[in-house]
Length: 322
Image (cartoon, rainbow, N blue to C red; front, side):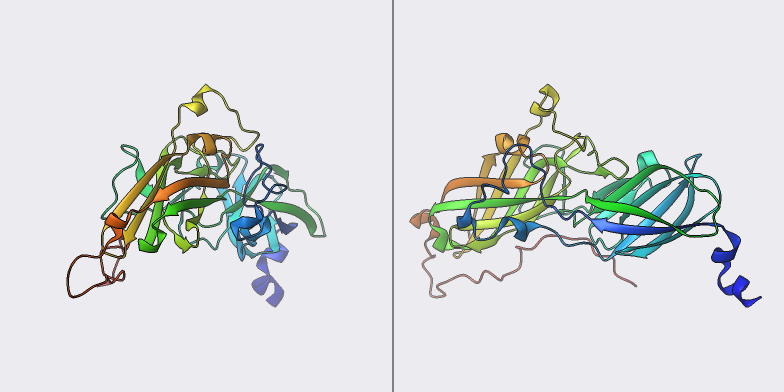
Protein backbone atom coordinates (compact mmCIF):
# COMPACT_ATOMS: atom_id res chain seq x y z
CA UNK A 1 0.00 0.00 0.00
CA UNK A 2 1.18 3.51 -0.79
CA UNK A 3 0.54 4.82 2.70
CA UNK A 4 2.83 2.16 4.14
CA UNK A 5 5.62 3.23 1.80
CA UNK A 6 5.24 6.97 2.00
CA UNK A 7 4.23 7.24 5.65
CA UNK A 8 6.26 4.43 7.14
CA UNK A 9 6.87 6.07 10.54
CA UNK A 10 3.19 6.82 10.99
CA UNK A 11 2.25 3.16 10.52
CA UNK A 12 5.25 1.25 11.87
CA UNK A 13 5.30 2.95 15.27
CA UNK A 14 2.46 3.70 17.61
CA UNK A 15 4.18 6.20 19.96
CA UNK A 16 3.82 9.61 18.33
CA UNK A 17 4.92 12.64 20.31
CA UNK A 18 4.26 16.21 19.19
CA UNK A 19 6.97 18.44 20.66
CA UNK A 20 5.78 22.01 21.34
CA UNK A 21 8.69 24.37 21.95
CA UNK A 22 8.78 27.69 23.77
CA UNK A 23 11.87 29.90 24.19
CA UNK A 24 13.29 31.65 27.27
CA UNK A 25 15.01 34.64 25.68
CA UNK A 26 17.03 36.18 28.49
CA UNK A 27 20.59 37.51 28.29
CA UNK A 28 21.73 37.30 31.95
CA UNK A 29 20.98 35.51 35.21
CA UNK A 30 20.49 37.79 38.20
CA UNK A 31 22.73 36.99 41.18
CA UNK A 32 22.11 40.23 43.03
CA UNK A 33 22.92 43.08 40.62
CA UNK A 34 19.25 43.47 39.67
CA UNK A 35 20.00 45.12 36.33
CA UNK A 36 16.42 44.80 35.10
CA UNK A 37 15.26 47.24 37.81
CA UNK A 38 18.25 49.59 38.07
CA UNK A 39 19.27 49.92 34.42
CA UNK A 40 21.30 53.03 33.62
CA UNK A 41 19.52 55.04 30.93
CA UNK A 42 22.84 56.67 29.97
CA UNK A 43 24.12 53.35 28.59
CA UNK A 44 22.50 53.98 25.23
CA UNK A 45 20.27 50.91 25.14
CA UNK A 46 17.44 49.36 27.11
CA UNK A 47 17.74 46.24 29.22
CA UNK A 48 15.52 44.27 26.82
CA UNK A 49 17.63 45.30 23.82
CA UNK A 50 20.22 42.72 24.88
CA UNK A 51 17.77 39.82 24.87
CA UNK A 52 18.41 37.22 22.15
CA UNK A 53 15.79 36.09 19.69
CA UNK A 54 14.49 32.51 19.46
CA UNK A 55 16.45 30.20 17.21
CA UNK A 56 15.22 29.16 13.78
CA UNK A 57 15.33 25.42 14.37
CA UNK A 58 15.81 22.59 16.86
CA UNK A 59 17.94 19.46 16.81
CA UNK A 60 16.56 16.51 18.79
CA UNK A 61 18.50 13.53 20.12
CA UNK A 62 16.60 10.58 21.60
CA UNK A 63 18.61 8.20 23.79
CA UNK A 64 17.72 4.63 24.71
CA UNK A 65 17.65 3.52 28.33
CA UNK A 66 21.17 2.07 27.85
CA UNK A 67 22.45 5.52 26.85
CA UNK A 68 22.86 4.91 23.13
CA UNK A 69 21.35 7.21 20.51
CA UNK A 70 17.97 5.93 19.29
CA UNK A 71 16.94 8.75 16.94
CA UNK A 72 18.02 12.19 15.78
CA UNK A 73 16.17 14.72 13.64
CA UNK A 74 15.59 18.43 13.04
CA UNK A 75 12.47 20.46 13.85
CA UNK A 76 11.21 23.94 13.14
CA UNK A 77 11.47 26.50 15.94
CA UNK A 78 7.99 25.69 17.28
CA UNK A 79 8.68 21.94 17.48
CA UNK A 80 7.86 18.79 15.56
CA UNK A 81 6.93 15.13 15.85
CA UNK A 82 8.93 12.25 17.33
CA UNK A 83 8.20 8.64 16.38
CA UNK A 84 9.12 6.12 19.06
CA UNK A 85 8.80 2.46 19.89
CA UNK A 86 7.34 1.51 23.25
CA UNK A 87 10.28 1.97 25.64
CA UNK A 88 11.97 4.35 28.09
CA UNK A 89 13.95 7.28 26.64
CA UNK A 90 15.86 10.45 27.41
CA UNK A 91 15.56 13.53 25.20
CA UNK A 92 18.12 16.22 24.43
CA UNK A 93 17.20 19.32 22.40
CA UNK A 94 19.39 22.22 21.22
CA UNK A 95 19.10 24.80 18.47
CA UNK A 96 20.59 23.79 15.13
CA UNK A 97 21.33 27.24 13.66
CA UNK A 98 24.65 27.99 15.38
CA UNK A 99 27.78 29.08 13.50
CA UNK A 100 30.63 29.08 16.03
CA UNK A 101 29.44 26.29 18.35
CA UNK A 102 31.31 22.97 18.17
CA UNK A 103 29.60 19.86 19.60
CA UNK A 104 31.37 16.85 21.05
CA UNK A 105 30.46 13.69 22.94
CA UNK A 106 26.88 13.54 21.64
CA UNK A 107 26.97 9.73 21.66
CA UNK A 108 26.28 9.81 25.42
CA UNK A 109 24.10 12.17 27.42
CA UNK A 110 26.69 12.74 30.15
CA UNK A 111 29.42 13.75 27.69
CA UNK A 112 27.38 15.92 25.30
CA UNK A 113 29.20 19.26 25.39
CA UNK A 114 29.35 22.50 23.41
CA UNK A 115 32.55 24.46 22.88
CA UNK A 116 33.55 27.18 20.43
CA UNK A 117 36.14 27.67 17.72
CA UNK A 118 39.78 28.64 18.18
CA UNK A 119 40.72 32.20 17.25
CA UNK A 120 44.14 33.86 17.14
CA UNK A 121 45.49 37.38 16.77
CA UNK A 122 48.94 38.23 15.52
CA UNK A 123 49.34 41.09 18.04
CA UNK A 124 47.76 39.37 21.05
CA UNK A 125 49.77 38.58 24.17
CA UNK A 126 48.30 35.92 26.45
CA UNK A 127 46.48 37.33 29.48
CA UNK A 128 46.56 33.98 31.30
CA UNK A 129 49.25 31.40 30.66
CA UNK A 130 48.16 28.25 28.77
CA UNK A 131 44.60 29.49 28.14
CA UNK A 132 43.26 28.77 24.68
CA UNK A 133 42.01 31.82 22.76
CA UNK A 134 38.56 31.31 21.22
CA UNK A 135 35.77 33.18 19.49
CA UNK A 136 32.68 33.99 21.57
CA UNK A 137 29.90 31.45 21.06
CA UNK A 138 26.73 32.40 19.25
CA UNK A 139 23.36 31.89 20.90
CA UNK A 140 22.77 28.39 22.23
CA UNK A 141 19.58 27.04 23.82
CA UNK A 142 18.90 23.62 25.28
CA UNK A 143 16.35 21.38 26.97
CA UNK A 144 16.84 17.96 28.57
CA UNK A 145 14.28 15.32 29.56
CA UNK A 146 15.84 12.72 31.83
CA UNK A 147 13.15 10.06 31.44
CA UNK A 148 10.15 9.57 29.22
CA UNK A 149 7.97 6.46 29.12
CA UNK A 150 6.80 5.79 25.57
CA UNK A 151 3.43 4.04 25.66
CA UNK A 152 1.40 2.81 22.70
CA UNK A 153 -1.56 4.96 21.71
CA UNK A 154 -3.80 5.54 18.72
CA UNK A 155 -3.34 9.30 19.10
CA UNK A 156 -0.35 11.61 19.07
CA UNK A 157 0.44 13.15 22.44
CA UNK A 158 1.61 16.73 22.96
CA UNK A 159 4.78 17.34 24.97
CA UNK A 160 5.87 20.89 25.86
CA UNK A 161 9.50 21.95 26.30
CA UNK A 162 11.18 25.26 27.12
CA UNK A 163 14.43 25.96 25.29
CA UNK A 164 16.58 27.73 27.88
CA UNK A 165 19.76 29.72 27.25
CA UNK A 166 23.16 28.11 27.67
CA UNK A 167 24.95 31.27 26.46
CA UNK A 168 24.78 34.66 28.18
CA UNK A 169 25.85 38.20 27.27
CA UNK A 170 28.17 40.71 28.94
CA UNK A 171 27.79 44.36 28.06
CA UNK A 172 31.37 45.64 28.40
CA UNK A 173 32.00 49.39 28.59
CA UNK A 174 35.50 50.89 28.33
CA UNK A 175 35.11 54.51 29.47
CA UNK A 176 37.75 57.07 28.38
CA UNK A 177 38.74 60.19 30.27
CA UNK A 178 40.81 61.64 27.45
CA UNK A 179 42.28 60.91 24.03
CA UNK A 180 39.38 59.03 22.45
CA UNK A 181 39.80 61.19 19.33
CA UNK A 182 43.06 59.35 18.65
CA UNK A 183 41.43 55.89 18.66
CA UNK A 184 40.70 54.46 15.22
CA UNK A 185 39.82 50.85 16.03
CA UNK A 186 39.34 48.83 19.19
CA UNK A 187 39.07 45.19 20.17
CA UNK A 188 39.13 43.32 23.43
CA UNK A 189 39.70 40.08 25.28
CA UNK A 190 38.19 38.52 28.39
CA UNK A 191 40.26 35.82 30.09
CA UNK A 192 39.18 33.16 32.54
CA UNK A 193 35.77 32.31 31.10
CA UNK A 194 34.39 28.80 30.59
CA UNK A 195 35.55 26.99 27.49
CA UNK A 196 32.52 24.67 27.36
CA UNK A 197 29.02 23.91 28.64
CA UNK A 198 27.34 20.52 29.14
CA UNK A 199 24.03 20.22 27.35
CA UNK A 200 22.16 17.93 29.73
CA UNK A 201 22.30 20.11 32.85
CA UNK A 202 23.89 23.40 31.81
CA UNK A 203 26.97 23.23 34.02
CA UNK A 204 30.14 24.70 32.58
CA UNK A 205 33.41 22.83 32.14
CA UNK A 206 36.35 23.41 34.44
CA UNK A 207 38.79 24.55 31.73
CA UNK A 208 39.03 28.34 31.22
CA UNK A 209 39.53 30.12 27.90
CA UNK A 210 40.18 33.65 26.66
CA UNK A 211 37.50 35.20 24.43
CA UNK A 212 38.63 37.53 21.63
CA UNK A 213 36.17 40.04 20.20
CA UNK A 214 35.81 43.35 18.35
CA UNK A 215 34.54 46.57 19.90
CA UNK A 216 32.63 49.54 18.60
CA UNK A 217 33.75 53.12 19.19
CA UNK A 218 31.16 55.12 21.11
CA UNK A 219 31.11 58.73 22.29
CA UNK A 220 32.28 57.65 25.76
CA UNK A 221 34.89 55.09 24.67
CA UNK A 222 34.62 51.52 23.41
CA UNK A 223 31.85 48.95 23.84
CA UNK A 224 31.34 45.25 23.21
CA UNK A 225 28.50 42.79 23.68
CA UNK A 226 30.24 39.51 24.39
CA UNK A 227 28.49 36.14 24.49
CA UNK A 228 29.93 33.51 26.85
CA UNK A 229 29.10 30.20 28.51
CA UNK A 230 29.74 31.96 31.83
CA UNK A 231 32.40 31.19 34.41
CA UNK A 232 34.13 27.79 34.61
CA UNK A 233 32.92 24.93 36.80
CA UNK A 234 29.59 26.57 37.53
CA UNK A 235 26.31 24.69 38.06
CA UNK A 236 23.14 25.98 36.47
CA UNK A 237 21.66 27.02 39.81
CA UNK A 238 22.26 29.74 42.38
CA UNK A 239 25.92 30.73 42.37
CA UNK A 240 28.06 29.20 45.10
CA UNK A 241 30.58 31.85 46.12
CA UNK A 242 32.88 29.34 47.79
CA UNK A 243 36.65 29.27 48.04
CA UNK A 244 37.01 27.30 44.80
CA UNK A 245 35.28 30.07 42.85
CA UNK A 246 37.44 32.77 44.42
CA UNK A 247 40.59 31.09 43.11
CA UNK A 248 39.61 31.86 39.51
CA UNK A 249 40.98 35.12 38.14
CA UNK A 250 39.38 37.20 35.36
CA UNK A 251 41.28 39.72 33.23
CA UNK A 252 39.90 42.22 30.72
CA UNK A 253 41.93 43.72 27.88
CA UNK A 254 41.39 46.54 25.42
CA UNK A 255 43.69 46.93 22.43
CA UNK A 256 43.31 50.14 20.42
CA UNK A 257 44.87 51.10 17.14
CA UNK A 258 45.52 54.82 17.09
CA UNK A 259 45.06 57.02 14.05
CA UNK A 260 48.86 57.35 13.79
CA UNK A 261 49.27 53.59 13.39
CA UNK A 262 50.47 52.83 16.90
CA UNK A 263 48.92 50.30 19.27
CA UNK A 264 48.07 50.73 22.92
CA UNK A 265 46.85 48.11 25.37
CA UNK A 266 44.88 48.48 28.60
CA UNK A 267 44.52 45.70 31.20
CA UNK A 268 42.04 45.36 34.04
CA UNK A 269 41.39 42.88 36.84
CA UNK A 270 37.61 42.39 36.70
CA UNK A 271 37.40 39.44 39.10
CA UNK A 272 35.14 41.33 41.53
CA UNK A 273 32.69 42.15 38.76
CA UNK A 274 32.62 38.66 37.23
CA UNK A 275 32.15 36.67 40.46
CA UNK A 276 28.95 38.61 41.17
CA UNK A 277 27.81 38.11 37.57
CA UNK A 278 28.75 34.53 36.66
CA UNK A 279 26.36 34.33 33.71
CA UNK A 280 25.96 37.63 31.90
CA UNK A 281 25.81 41.18 33.17
CA UNK A 282 27.50 44.55 32.82
CA UNK A 283 31.25 45.15 33.14
CA UNK A 284 32.45 48.74 33.37
CA UNK A 285 36.06 49.95 33.43
CA UNK A 286 36.87 53.65 33.43
CA UNK A 287 39.71 56.15 33.51
CA UNK A 288 41.26 55.17 30.17
CA UNK A 289 43.47 57.77 28.49
CA UNK A 290 45.50 58.26 25.33
CA UNK A 291 47.88 61.17 25.75
CA UNK A 292 48.56 63.81 23.10
CA UNK A 293 52.11 62.50 22.75
CA UNK A 294 50.85 58.97 22.12
CA UNK A 295 48.30 60.15 19.59
CA UNK A 296 50.33 62.67 17.64
CA UNK A 297 50.91 62.08 13.95
CA UNK A 298 54.40 61.21 12.70
CA UNK A 299 56.26 64.04 11.04
CA UNK A 300 55.90 63.13 7.36
CA UNK A 301 54.27 64.46 4.22
CA UNK A 302 51.71 61.65 4.25
CA UNK A 303 49.98 62.97 7.35
CA UNK A 304 47.28 60.66 8.74
CA UNK A 305 47.25 56.88 8.99
CA UNK A 306 44.88 54.63 7.10
CA UNK A 307 43.25 52.44 9.77
CA UNK A 308 42.13 50.03 7.10
CA UNK A 309 45.64 48.65 6.47
CA UNK A 310 46.23 44.92 6.84
CA UNK A 311 47.51 43.43 10.07
CA UNK A 312 44.57 44.32 12.29
CA UNK A 313 42.19 41.48 11.56
CA UNK A 314 41.97 38.18 13.40
CA UNK A 315 43.77 35.14 12.02
CA UNK A 316 41.23 32.45 11.12
CA UNK A 317 42.03 29.07 9.59
CA UNK A 318 39.83 28.63 6.51
CA UNK A 319 39.95 25.29 4.61
CA UNK A 320 40.06 25.84 0.85
CA UNK A 321 38.96 23.24 -1.71
CA UNK A 322 41.77 22.13 -4.02
